[in-house]
Image (cartoon, one colour):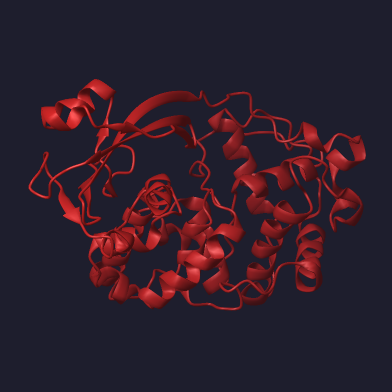
Length: 366
Protein backbone atom coordinates (compact mmCIF):
# COMPACT_ATOMS: atom_id res chain seq x y z
CA UNK A 1 0.00 0.00 0.00
CA UNK A 2 1.14 3.60 -0.52
CA UNK A 3 0.62 6.58 1.75
CA UNK A 4 -1.65 9.40 0.73
CA UNK A 5 -1.12 13.04 1.64
CA UNK A 6 -1.42 13.78 5.36
CA UNK A 7 -4.95 14.37 6.58
CA UNK A 8 -6.05 17.63 8.03
CA UNK A 9 -7.80 20.72 6.84
CA UNK A 10 -7.09 24.44 7.15
CA UNK A 11 -9.22 26.04 9.84
CA UNK A 12 -12.57 27.23 8.58
CA UNK A 13 -12.59 25.19 5.35
CA UNK A 14 -15.76 23.16 4.74
CA UNK A 15 -17.00 20.92 1.99
CA UNK A 16 -20.46 19.69 1.15
CA UNK A 17 -20.87 15.91 1.13
CA UNK A 18 -20.45 14.39 -2.31
CA UNK A 19 -23.13 12.45 -4.11
CA UNK A 20 -23.49 9.26 -2.17
CA UNK A 21 -22.15 10.94 0.97
CA UNK A 22 -25.33 9.88 2.73
CA UNK A 23 -23.94 6.30 2.63
CA UNK A 24 -24.80 5.21 6.19
CA UNK A 25 -21.53 4.55 8.01
CA UNK A 26 -22.61 1.63 10.18
CA UNK A 27 -24.21 -0.14 7.22
CA UNK A 28 -21.18 0.35 5.00
CA UNK A 29 -18.59 -0.73 7.56
CA UNK A 30 -20.76 -3.67 8.63
CA UNK A 31 -20.97 -4.95 5.05
CA UNK A 32 -17.22 -4.69 4.64
CA UNK A 33 -16.51 -6.47 7.95
CA UNK A 34 -18.91 -9.33 7.22
CA UNK A 35 -17.61 -9.78 3.68
CA UNK A 36 -13.99 -9.81 4.81
CA UNK A 37 -14.69 -12.49 7.38
CA UNK A 38 -16.03 -14.93 4.79
CA UNK A 39 -14.64 -13.79 1.42
CA UNK A 40 -11.56 -11.68 2.13
CA UNK A 41 -7.93 -12.68 2.26
CA UNK A 42 -7.24 -14.33 5.61
CA UNK A 43 -4.27 -16.64 4.97
CA UNK A 44 -1.45 -14.24 4.15
CA UNK A 45 1.56 -14.70 6.46
CA UNK A 46 1.29 -11.23 7.98
CA UNK A 47 -2.38 -11.66 8.85
CA UNK A 48 -3.85 -13.13 12.02
CA UNK A 49 -1.22 -11.38 14.10
CA UNK A 50 -1.20 -8.26 16.24
CA UNK A 51 2.58 -8.07 16.33
CA UNK A 52 3.38 -4.48 15.23
CA UNK A 53 6.79 -5.49 13.90
CA UNK A 54 5.34 -8.04 11.47
CA UNK A 55 2.46 -5.80 10.43
CA UNK A 56 4.76 -2.81 9.94
CA UNK A 57 7.20 -4.87 7.88
CA UNK A 58 4.41 -6.14 5.62
CA UNK A 59 2.91 -2.68 5.15
CA UNK A 60 6.27 -1.22 4.11
CA UNK A 61 6.98 -4.09 1.75
CA UNK A 62 3.53 -3.81 0.18
CA UNK A 63 3.97 -0.15 -0.72
CA UNK A 64 3.95 -0.06 -4.55
CA UNK A 65 4.62 -3.82 -4.63
CA UNK A 66 2.26 -6.71 -5.38
CA UNK A 67 1.47 -9.34 -2.76
CA UNK A 68 2.93 -12.13 -4.89
CA UNK A 69 6.30 -10.37 -5.04
CA UNK A 70 6.36 -9.71 -1.28
CA UNK A 71 5.58 -13.22 -0.01
CA UNK A 72 9.05 -14.72 -0.35
CA UNK A 73 10.86 -11.58 0.76
CA UNK A 74 8.73 -11.28 3.88
CA UNK A 75 9.53 -14.80 5.09
CA UNK A 76 13.26 -14.48 4.33
CA UNK A 77 13.47 -11.06 5.96
CA UNK A 78 11.83 -12.33 9.14
CA UNK A 79 14.16 -15.30 9.24
CA UNK A 80 17.12 -12.95 9.10
CA UNK A 81 15.71 -10.18 11.34
CA UNK A 82 13.10 -11.84 13.59
CA UNK A 83 12.29 -8.73 15.65
CA UNK A 84 12.79 -5.00 15.71
CA UNK A 85 15.85 -5.24 17.95
CA UNK A 86 17.60 -7.59 15.52
CA UNK A 87 16.81 -5.26 12.63
CA UNK A 88 18.02 -2.18 14.53
CA UNK A 89 21.31 -3.88 15.43
CA UNK A 90 22.04 -5.09 11.89
CA UNK A 91 24.40 -3.22 9.55
CA UNK A 92 22.58 -1.31 6.80
CA UNK A 93 24.45 -3.36 4.17
CA UNK A 94 22.84 -6.53 5.56
CA UNK A 95 19.38 -4.95 5.42
CA UNK A 96 19.89 -3.79 1.83
CA UNK A 97 21.14 -7.26 0.91
CA UNK A 98 17.97 -8.85 2.30
CA UNK A 99 15.89 -6.27 0.41
CA UNK A 100 17.83 -6.65 -2.84
CA UNK A 101 15.48 -7.13 -5.78
CA UNK A 102 12.36 -5.78 -4.06
CA UNK A 103 12.98 -2.25 -5.35
CA UNK A 104 12.29 1.23 -3.94
CA UNK A 105 15.34 0.95 -1.70
CA UNK A 106 14.54 4.08 0.29
CA UNK A 107 11.97 1.84 2.00
CA UNK A 108 14.76 -0.41 3.28
CA UNK A 109 16.85 2.52 4.49
CA UNK A 110 13.83 4.02 6.27
CA UNK A 111 12.97 0.59 7.68
CA UNK A 112 16.40 0.38 9.26
CA UNK A 113 16.21 3.94 10.63
CA UNK A 114 12.72 3.31 11.96
CA UNK A 115 13.80 0.14 13.79
CA UNK A 116 16.65 2.07 15.41
CA UNK A 117 14.25 4.80 16.56
CA UNK A 118 11.74 2.28 17.93
CA UNK A 119 14.54 0.71 19.97
CA UNK A 120 16.26 3.97 20.92
CA UNK A 121 13.25 6.22 21.56
CA UNK A 122 10.53 3.77 22.49
CA UNK A 123 12.37 0.96 24.25
CA UNK A 124 11.70 -1.54 21.47
CA UNK A 125 7.89 -1.14 21.55
CA UNK A 126 6.00 0.46 18.67
CA UNK A 127 3.76 3.44 19.56
CA UNK A 128 0.09 2.50 19.78
CA UNK A 129 -1.52 5.43 17.93
CA UNK A 130 -1.41 6.47 14.30
CA UNK A 131 -0.35 9.98 15.28
CA UNK A 132 2.70 8.72 17.18
CA UNK A 133 3.56 6.17 14.50
CA UNK A 134 3.73 8.95 11.88
CA UNK A 135 6.67 10.45 13.74
CA UNK A 136 8.82 7.46 12.74
CA UNK A 137 10.87 7.36 9.50
CA UNK A 138 9.07 5.96 6.48
CA UNK A 139 5.64 5.76 8.11
CA UNK A 140 3.02 8.03 6.52
CA UNK A 141 -0.58 8.55 7.62
CA UNK A 142 -2.11 5.59 5.78
CA UNK A 143 0.57 3.12 6.89
CA UNK A 144 0.36 4.44 10.45
CA UNK A 145 -3.41 3.95 10.44
CA UNK A 146 -3.06 0.41 9.12
CA UNK A 147 -0.62 -0.54 11.89
CA UNK A 148 -2.65 1.04 14.69
CA UNK A 149 -5.88 -0.45 13.34
CA UNK A 150 -4.55 -3.97 12.84
CA UNK A 151 -2.54 -4.15 16.05
CA UNK A 152 -4.38 -1.95 18.52
CA UNK A 153 -7.92 -1.58 17.13
CA UNK A 154 -7.58 2.20 16.78
CA UNK A 155 -10.34 3.95 14.86
CA UNK A 156 -8.02 5.31 12.16
CA UNK A 157 -8.63 5.58 8.41
CA UNK A 158 -6.36 4.28 5.67
CA UNK A 159 -6.33 5.85 2.23
CA UNK A 160 -3.96 4.06 -0.12
CA UNK A 161 -4.52 3.87 -3.87
CA UNK A 162 -6.87 0.89 -3.75
CA UNK A 163 -8.94 2.35 -0.93
CA UNK A 164 -9.25 5.69 -2.74
CA UNK A 165 -10.74 3.81 -5.66
CA UNK A 166 -13.24 1.95 -3.47
CA UNK A 167 -14.38 5.02 -1.55
CA UNK A 168 -14.61 7.43 -4.50
CA UNK A 169 -16.79 4.90 -6.34
CA UNK A 170 -19.04 4.16 -3.38
CA UNK A 171 -19.47 7.84 -2.56
CA UNK A 172 -19.57 9.09 -6.14
CA UNK A 173 -16.71 11.40 -5.15
CA UNK A 174 -15.88 13.06 -8.46
CA UNK A 175 -13.52 15.79 -7.25
CA UNK A 176 -10.01 15.87 -8.67
CA UNK A 177 -7.66 14.20 -6.18
CA UNK A 178 -4.72 16.10 -7.67
CA UNK A 179 -5.91 18.99 -5.49
CA UNK A 180 -4.89 18.73 -1.84
CA UNK A 181 -8.20 20.14 -0.61
CA UNK A 182 -10.12 17.39 -2.39
CA UNK A 183 -7.90 14.67 -0.99
CA UNK A 184 -8.38 16.10 2.50
CA UNK A 185 -12.14 15.98 1.93
CA UNK A 186 -11.87 12.30 1.00
CA UNK A 187 -9.92 11.69 4.22
CA UNK A 188 -12.89 13.19 6.09
CA UNK A 189 -15.28 10.80 4.33
CA UNK A 190 -12.96 7.87 5.07
CA UNK A 191 -12.97 8.70 8.77
CA UNK A 192 -16.75 9.12 8.83
CA UNK A 193 -17.25 5.60 7.43
CA UNK A 194 -15.16 3.85 10.09
CA UNK A 195 -16.79 1.33 12.45
CA UNK A 196 -17.89 2.83 15.74
CA UNK A 197 -18.36 -0.29 17.91
CA UNK A 198 -16.34 -3.32 18.94
CA UNK A 199 -13.26 -1.68 17.50
CA UNK A 200 -10.76 -4.26 18.68
CA UNK A 201 -12.45 -6.84 16.46
CA UNK A 202 -14.02 -4.71 13.74
CA UNK A 203 -11.23 -2.27 12.89
CA UNK A 204 -8.74 -4.92 11.72
CA UNK A 205 -11.50 -6.64 9.68
CA UNK A 206 -12.70 -3.38 8.19
CA UNK A 207 -9.21 -2.16 7.30
CA UNK A 208 -8.30 -5.48 5.72
CA UNK A 209 -11.68 -5.61 3.99
CA UNK A 210 -11.12 -2.30 2.22
CA UNK A 211 -7.71 -3.49 1.07
CA UNK A 212 -9.17 -6.78 -0.14
CA UNK A 213 -12.02 -5.11 -2.02
CA UNK A 214 -9.60 -2.83 -3.85
CA UNK A 215 -7.23 -5.68 -4.68
CA UNK A 216 -9.70 -8.39 -5.71
CA UNK A 217 -13.13 -6.90 -6.55
CA UNK A 218 -13.09 -3.14 -7.11
CA UNK A 219 -10.39 -3.31 -9.78
CA UNK A 220 -9.25 -0.32 -11.86
CA UNK A 221 -10.73 -1.91 -15.00
CA UNK A 222 -13.63 -4.33 -15.25
CA UNK A 223 -14.52 -4.33 -11.56
CA UNK A 224 -16.67 -7.22 -10.32
CA UNK A 225 -19.59 -5.09 -9.18
CA UNK A 226 -22.08 -7.97 -9.06
CA UNK A 227 -20.22 -9.69 -6.23
CA UNK A 228 -19.22 -6.54 -4.36
CA UNK A 229 -20.71 -6.40 -0.82
CA UNK A 230 -21.21 -2.62 -0.99
CA UNK A 231 -22.69 -2.56 -4.49
CA UNK A 232 -26.17 -1.59 -3.17
CA UNK A 233 -24.64 1.59 -1.71
CA UNK A 234 -22.26 2.36 -4.58
CA UNK A 235 -22.98 5.51 -6.57
CA UNK A 236 -20.57 4.54 -9.36
CA UNK A 237 -22.26 1.15 -9.81
CA UNK A 238 -25.66 2.83 -9.88
CA UNK A 239 -24.41 5.25 -12.53
CA UNK A 240 -22.95 2.36 -14.52
CA UNK A 241 -19.54 4.02 -14.82
CA UNK A 242 -17.21 2.79 -12.07
CA UNK A 243 -14.12 3.40 -14.20
CA UNK A 244 -14.82 7.15 -14.08
CA UNK A 245 -13.52 7.14 -10.46
CA UNK A 246 -11.23 8.23 -8.96
CA UNK A 247 -10.55 11.47 -10.79
CA UNK A 248 -6.92 12.59 -10.91
CA UNK A 249 -5.90 14.84 -13.78
CA UNK A 250 -2.25 15.39 -12.96
CA UNK A 251 -0.23 12.72 -14.75
CA UNK A 252 3.29 11.68 -13.85
CA UNK A 253 5.81 12.63 -16.51
CA UNK A 254 8.03 9.72 -17.51
CA UNK A 255 11.60 10.24 -18.59
CA UNK A 256 14.39 8.08 -19.98
CA UNK A 257 18.12 7.89 -19.28
CA UNK A 258 20.95 5.89 -20.82
CA UNK A 259 23.66 4.50 -18.54
CA UNK A 260 26.74 2.41 -19.27
CA UNK A 261 27.69 -0.36 -16.84
CA UNK A 262 31.28 -1.57 -16.61
CA UNK A 263 31.32 -5.32 -16.11
CA UNK A 264 34.94 -5.59 -15.00
CA UNK A 265 35.94 -9.09 -13.97
CA UNK A 266 39.22 -10.90 -13.45
CA UNK A 267 40.33 -14.24 -14.75
CA UNK A 268 39.41 -15.94 -11.45
CA UNK A 269 35.76 -14.79 -11.63
CA UNK A 270 35.91 -11.82 -9.27
CA UNK A 271 33.79 -8.75 -10.13
CA UNK A 272 34.58 -5.09 -9.42
CA UNK A 273 31.71 -3.39 -7.58
CA UNK A 274 31.20 0.06 -6.12
CA UNK A 275 28.72 1.31 -3.54
CA UNK A 276 26.29 3.81 -5.08
CA UNK A 277 26.18 7.33 -3.61
CA UNK A 278 23.24 8.68 -1.60
CA UNK A 279 20.97 10.18 -2.84
CA UNK A 280 20.51 8.83 -6.34
CA UNK A 281 19.48 5.76 -8.28
CA UNK A 282 20.21 2.56 -6.28
CA UNK A 283 21.60 4.64 -3.39
CA UNK A 284 23.63 2.59 -0.92
CA UNK A 285 23.66 -0.57 -3.05
CA UNK A 286 26.66 -2.33 -4.51
CA UNK A 287 26.71 -1.98 -8.28
CA UNK A 288 28.77 -2.28 -11.40
CA UNK A 289 30.43 1.11 -12.04
CA UNK A 290 27.95 3.44 -13.76
CA UNK A 291 28.83 6.00 -16.45
CA UNK A 292 26.90 8.57 -18.43
CA UNK A 293 28.62 7.59 -21.69
CA UNK A 294 30.77 4.88 -23.18
CA UNK A 295 33.65 7.35 -23.56
CA UNK A 296 33.54 8.09 -19.83
CA UNK A 297 33.62 4.36 -19.14
CA UNK A 298 36.71 3.88 -21.31
CA UNK A 299 38.55 6.68 -19.50
CA UNK A 300 38.90 4.60 -16.31
CA UNK A 301 40.44 1.63 -18.14
CA UNK A 302 44.08 0.97 -19.10
CA UNK A 303 44.65 1.89 -22.79
CA UNK A 304 45.54 -1.70 -23.72
CA UNK A 305 42.28 -3.08 -22.35
CA UNK A 306 40.10 -0.61 -24.27
CA UNK A 307 40.73 -2.52 -27.51
CA UNK A 308 39.34 -5.71 -25.96
CA UNK A 309 36.05 -4.39 -24.64
CA UNK A 310 32.89 -6.34 -25.45
CA UNK A 311 29.55 -4.55 -25.71
CA UNK A 312 26.77 -6.67 -24.27
CA UNK A 313 23.23 -6.34 -25.58
CA UNK A 314 21.59 -3.36 -23.84
CA UNK A 315 18.34 -3.73 -21.90
CA UNK A 316 15.73 -1.51 -20.27
CA UNK A 317 14.96 -1.36 -16.55
CA UNK A 318 11.67 0.39 -15.70
CA UNK A 319 11.48 2.60 -12.62
CA UNK A 320 8.36 4.39 -11.39
CA UNK A 321 8.98 7.61 -13.32
CA UNK A 322 11.89 6.71 -15.57
CA UNK A 323 13.10 4.10 -18.06
CA UNK A 324 16.78 3.24 -17.63
CA UNK A 325 18.46 2.08 -20.85
CA UNK A 326 21.41 0.06 -19.56
CA UNK A 327 24.44 -0.69 -21.75
CA UNK A 328 26.79 -3.25 -20.17
CA UNK A 329 30.38 -3.29 -21.39
CA UNK A 330 32.57 -6.26 -20.46
CA UNK A 331 36.27 -5.96 -19.64
CA UNK A 332 38.65 -8.67 -18.40
CA UNK A 333 41.14 -6.92 -16.12
CA UNK A 334 44.02 -7.75 -13.83
CA UNK A 335 43.15 -8.13 -10.13
CA UNK A 336 45.60 -5.26 -9.54
CA UNK A 337 43.30 -2.82 -11.41
CA UNK A 338 41.27 -0.37 -9.36
CA UNK A 339 39.06 2.61 -10.21
CA UNK A 340 37.72 4.94 -7.58
CA UNK A 341 36.13 3.58 -4.43
CA UNK A 342 35.26 -0.05 -4.90
CA UNK A 343 36.52 -3.58 -4.43
CA UNK A 344 36.84 -6.96 -6.09
CA UNK A 345 34.25 -9.47 -4.92
CA UNK A 346 34.68 -13.18 -5.54
CA UNK A 347 31.94 -15.21 -7.19
CA UNK A 348 31.01 -16.57 -3.77
CA UNK A 349 30.81 -13.10 -2.22
CA UNK A 350 28.81 -10.81 -4.48
CA UNK A 351 25.50 -12.78 -4.36
CA UNK A 352 25.21 -11.92 -0.65
CA UNK A 353 25.48 -8.17 -1.26
CA UNK A 354 22.67 -5.70 -1.71
CA UNK A 355 22.54 -5.33 -5.49
CA UNK A 356 20.04 -3.55 -7.77
CA UNK A 357 17.71 -6.13 -9.31
CA UNK A 358 18.84 -5.57 -12.95
CA UNK A 359 22.52 -5.80 -11.96
CA UNK A 360 21.92 -9.01 -10.00
CA UNK A 361 20.08 -10.58 -12.93
CA UNK A 362 22.81 -9.50 -15.33
CA UNK A 363 25.59 -11.00 -13.19
CA UNK A 364 23.67 -14.21 -12.65
CA UNK A 365 23.34 -14.64 -16.42
CA UNK A 366 26.77 -13.36 -17.42
